Length: 206
Image 1: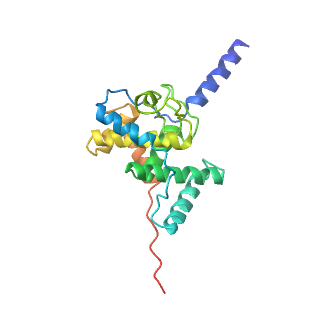
Image 2: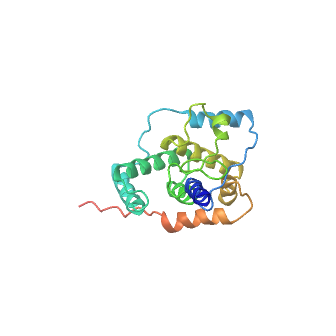
């Protein structure tokens, strides 16, 4: 009986922490006051999101393509489209490639909204809770879709700035594995093989 209970508890904990084999944890580092203020402003903006697409046709094409790719992992169409619109908006807002962000989410959490790593990182982008105290508000919920993506994209852009655009090192910082190649290579592979996107050619006017 005890052995069966132990197995059940292990399975439950494993399911909660099984966002990805590569899910890690950003490391706490003191921030200059100016950087902390800029990051706080970045995550605290509560203005209603505008469209991040240049045209309605671009939105239809990108959302349609990405929705098909994501369907097996996220079956509900309404939730899937909301997720993709939010990824696109928050990535563009932070100056990131939305397809890169999708690759990172695939590796970090496997697109599981409530994933929790062994280190306590939370949600789609596996954000560590210390960031809420450092740059956010006490009521910020890292399991909330837009909040999680807002923090994750802001943090990744922060690491890219620190590393002067070096994606390999920025991804290592994001995962708490700076200097190791497994995680950056996994994200790049997911980005390039699963989520790379080329817009279809424009239809010539009659």
